Image 1: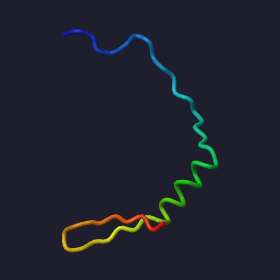
Image 2 (image 1 turned 30 degrees about the horizontal axis):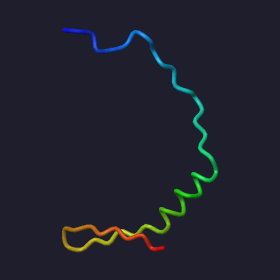
Image 3 (image 1 turned 135 degrees about the horizontal axis):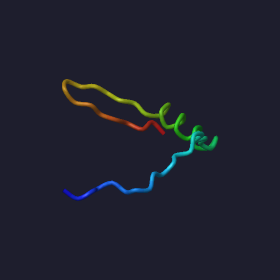
Length: 48
């Protein structure tokens, strides 16, 4: 069976710091999202 993995190991950065704009966008989106459960169905509504 052929080798499927590359020889070179890619290092991942230890500190991933998102921008403040990204955090603010995600928080505002989560505040505006509403999930309504009706019987066995889920309805998602964005309240903007």
